[in-house]
Length: 413
Image 1 (tube, one colour):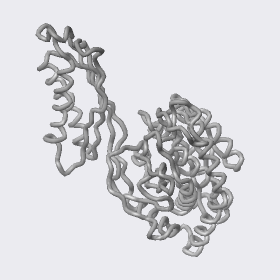
Image 2 (cartoon, helix red, strand yellow):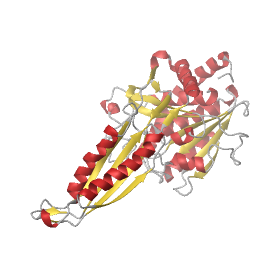
Image 3 (cartoon, rainbow, N blue to C red):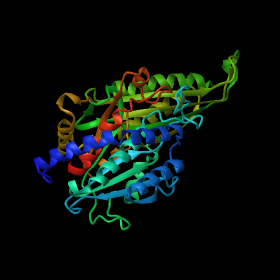
Image 4 (cartoon, rainbow, N blue to C red):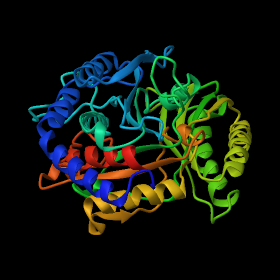
């Protein structure tokens, strides 16, 4: 925070604020292009080409091919300020869309049926491209180097962030010019619960660790009218779902947040037939790493014993997901203050913890990170729709706020 003086910071804020408004049309065009052409996790090939083209036109140096064994759509870029070695900071946006059929009627609606930017990653990418333009065009007014990470696969395990980290995206990269690795990283996420023009922060543990649970219950099956001659996997599955709730209710410290949800049950083809298998899928959300690991063992034990009691066999797979998002208190305070400086105190709010997950946490395990929220609701009722829904949309005036704040954080956090 002391790299630039208060006078220079005020000047930089004014520049970024004015210039962000000046490139609003460009950012809206970026966002709408990406929204029309969504690509699912680890298949963001055209999205990556589009981002690379925009960076080339800005004159920003970058490398491509990150997440090489998972589609190779990742991009790492760097922009050097007046004194490139003064500091080094990273900013991240995610590229992937979700397998959702979009509500029709928008002029910029998805052209890829069954894929939709229902989590706002099109807006994230448009904002980071906007920030790149602000940083690149105003290099003489800030010191240091800003690394830009355009990351694929946030929505799907193993998480593109984990792959970017493993491939060295937070290290010194020979093909780029920086002589050091980033000392911190920030990212933003659209948030329809806040109006456009506002942002929200939460210091410390903010979002939950996320694990996937897959259960396959097998039994002999048989005629629905003759249950005595068979084992019933539906009955075993029903009791398994209920029994699993005891893990959260009785095996977890009640002061530590935790959620276990079974969100999918598949089995059976007719009402008078006992099937021979049922498949369940669910999620475990937690903050306490010790309980998280113990819960995995408890889940397996409860499932095994319950299915055995009803004469069914079972296969269990628990996939370790994303770690807890933990916002570094010092960096978060600095980013929050920059938001106040840029937007005014009445446009910056404090947020509660939430049980959703984010692979940004993989970066935070390596260097201090700040993950904050960008308000995106406006007059259009569709901008109040929730994330991961077919009707999700954003008030595009939020792109101005998003780009200016990302640029300011990159240049001075």
